[in-house]
Amino acid sequence: MIRSELIAKISEENPHLFQRDVEKIVNTIFDEITEALASGDRVELRGFGAFSVKKRDARTGRNPRTGDAVEVEEKHVPFFKTGKLLRDRLNGNEE
Image (cartoon, rainbow, N blue to C red; front, side, top):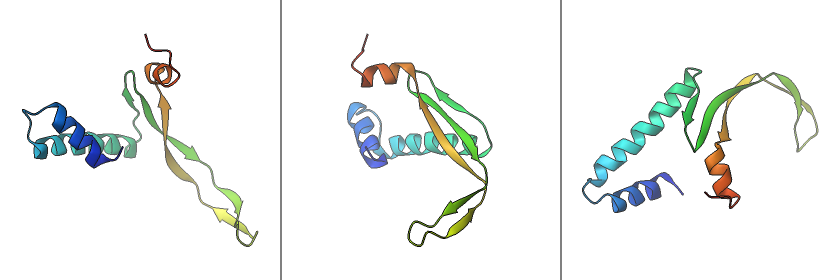
């Protein structure tokens, strides 16, 4: 599902809301999650999962085309860990 499909689905399920308002709500949620991660915070959505940032140390990698050694800088990457409810639903263990 992409962002526009999510907005359309929420608008469809909430006919009392204007689509532009739903779009603003969805964008605000994503912006807040992004800002929290950018500042190093963890974002937990109960029953869904938790977003956090993991640090990857600098390393020597390989260029897959040439096989040459390449220095890869340290970087921070987003990480998502599913919540128990989501994991259970995906595995057919709904309660």
